[in-house]
Image (cartoon, rainbow over all chains, first blue to last red; front, side, top):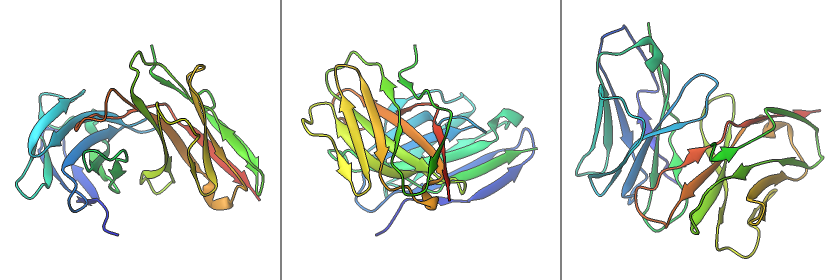
Amino acid sequence: AAGVIQSPRHLIKEKRETATLKCYPIPRHDTVYWYQQGPGQDPQFLISFYEKMQSDKGSIPDRFSAQQFSDYHSELNMSSLELGDSALYFCASRLAGNNEQFFGPGTRLTVL
Amino acid sequence: AQKITQTQPGMFVQEKEAVTLDCTYDTSDQSYGLFWYKQPSSGEMIFLIYQGSYDEQNATEGRYSLNFQKARKSANLVISASQLGDSAMYFCAMREGFDNAGNMLTFGGGTRLMVKP
């Protein structure tokens, strides 16, 4: 079965640079979530989209923005990167009405 | 206050034995969902099992079962017949409120399970 696809899987950036993370949800899933997992931490919710509209917002810095496109894929844009942004970024997708959130493999971002 | 508490930072279990991973939660919502995820060292998050607050029976999925005690607000994961491949970090998570689109998960701090041969 198709799973959530995230790209790139690994990304290395310098401080103050920008980064774009991409997420392709499971086909027919209409809801996408972004989570950030720092080293040794539990995942923290950033933002979610339902049917291409932002549906909820968590602890997402103002330097970050995200959107969901007409084909339901989502992108997380991160600007003015800081050392503390180094983390594993997960995208998860869900079909509204179903319980499970299925996670992608994550993008490991390292900011030097 | 923490919404999800996992009191066991790390646990050992002998291969082929059963193990219980603890999870307590805090919510004032009547409708909520509880999840368990497995995170191996490779980093991916693997969905294991789900329990809805209105589900009368404990959820089971293969070797995984969820011991749901609503009055105690606990949702412990039981893994039967542990295997070496079960060694991983395990996260308990909760979705609060009705099953609306966009409801995010709140995670506990995780329990690292190590299975001994």
